[in-house]
Length: 347
Image (cartoon, rainbow, N blue to C red; front, side, top):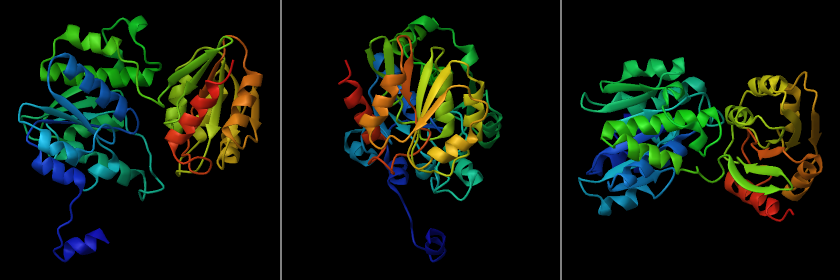
């Protein structure tokens, strides 16, 4: 439809395109399959700690167009940019951070290639005085460096010179997010001691491996933002303690085979609670798992009761569904908020 309209000479725009056209200050853009919000929030935190005026917007923070009247040339804007926002963009940010890109929104995009192609627009229109911050640990993202005219700075979770005991975020995937944010901070000129201070004090975002409560020695984590198998895999790998994971929801066209393989290989995974329409599909992907697999919970109260009965002191219970939420809940926030509300009532 849009292509036909463009062929007839119709000018098509979007809030993101308008913002890029009208923004008077440097833009930092962050994209990836997951981790965008965490990375953008941490970059914003780093810049604020350094005394800079910075605004967080895009899929997180304030709506972009509402910021325009406030912005000055000396400000910074950090944008979390999805594939939808990037798909028709014909400008790129001054600093573009590219995290790991796998697949998502295949219920919307024609295929994974269209999804990944949309992501490349964050780099495609950069200029020689811009900066590209790219994850070098994955060939998909590493190869994207060829698309930009900007100065490229690769980052890796393996290069972090930090005291890992002081990092409050769980999981290797969050080390990648931290590495991206630290690289952006250095490019802007923030001193290393300020960057480290911002990282060590950062507790993460709501619904992203968020510690809700410890009850009778059992820790409950809300990771409702996990709507793909990749994010559930990251959550599973984030814990070495005996783990009970809640999986399932509505379909996004995902491939659950890698999730099934991860489940089969993790010896600390003691039980799986399957929920929602995708429960049979996820169950079919699991082979050679010696732990318990439960299903049948129709409400969040029932689901948490199942987890509570299984959990022993020292265990971790994590809601990391790997699916969208629309079959049982309004959205991922509703799912996470219900989980938190009922966990907080446990005693």
